[in-house]
Image (cartoon, rainbow, N blue to C red; front, side):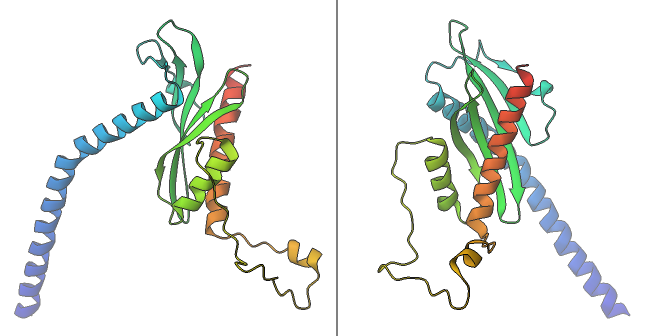
Length: 195
């Protein structure tokens, strides 16, 4: 019994020391992380709208009804002219978290989409989806061909129509679907807010 008590005290002490170290590290790094996040957000806004003026723009996050939207900004230039509406939207699936900045133009169309955070394990594939679908960058998008030597897939007993009906969602498809859903959330809010 005495031995169990001694082991419990030792393990409890180790856990307490680890908890104190983690809390201290969190206190030291949380302001740095918040500053870096704010800097990245500002740089992304300026990459989307070069004439963006933070003094003239309005943060209207309090008008948002969807919990996936973490921030909504009416972006204006230094003369007070409307540039568009910026949404920061966050979503999560089994593969990780994605945070996007979605710029919606006055006519309720997607102007540009940029990543703020891409915690998906297949991040480059999801970024390619954004580049090709939302034209956020002029960089080339490369498609990966699973049949590198022009080989044909062997279908076996299934017909071509049966094969096309099979649900083959993989991780990258789920990430692309999450991106699409987040963009649609921003679009829906913009259309609802402009009625």
